[in-house]
Image 1 (tube, helix red, strand yellow):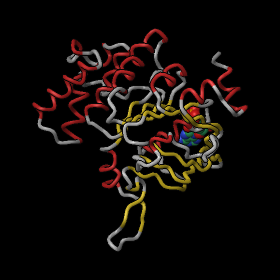
Image 2 (cartoon, helix red, strand yellow):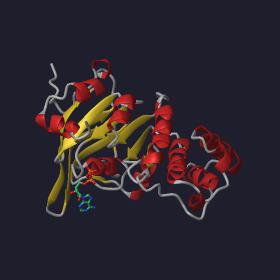
Image 3 (cartoon, helix red, strand yellow):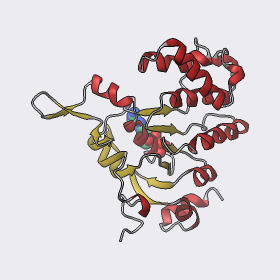
Image 4 (cartoon, helix red, strand yellow):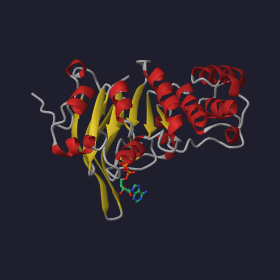
Length: 271
Ligand code: ADP
């Protein structure tokens, strides 16, 4: 059966299901630098997948390719069986995806970044409603209602009319999480979302993510340096180094019984 080193090993209960997201033979090169060296990886519907690994190992690049922000150099990423970066032209030939295709695919993908990326000139509420009215064409009243409800869910019911400059880093990040969630994407990529926060604000953001992770509908790709958080929230953990998946498994397998020396050394730094 699968050894832990097989790149696409999955939890046995999920083997039968069709993955929501697949990376197949994905590489990414920046100039001379091959940052992703051929990754095969799946994320299942509702699954919470944590990606851990040393700085510079390609974790963010992996996430950015799914968020349509970096195009793979080779290989294929599919969402719901549909290719993200390629599409068929009128004659049925596979060609590079155009902006319209990417735009449609983006509706399935929520994004939360290290630096929040809120619009500074819009209130918390407007930051969240804008996504609904502009991307999903939801009518204004309904958008307001859904945005307010989502901001309540992340603990910001009293901050709807505040501008980002008047919010703490943790609050800003919670607005960004509400903005991603309100679009009801199939998957949300959390790219080191606590790395830019003062240490005392990290907990409140992780707590909110833990709460929303209880919703089994939305898959999550959690790129993180927070090992305890990964252990608590993730169904499966992928450890990457030097652009390859070195080891993957359940949080217990990865954190309690790391097999490779690379992972043992990496985890040793957190002890
Ligand atoms: P991680 O998230 O694991 O820290 P990254 O994916 O951010 O790793 O980066 C992996 C490597 O790719 C690093 O060496 C980084 O400097 C390089 N890199 C990332 N983005 C770019 C880019 N746009 N241009 C050139 N090099 C990049």
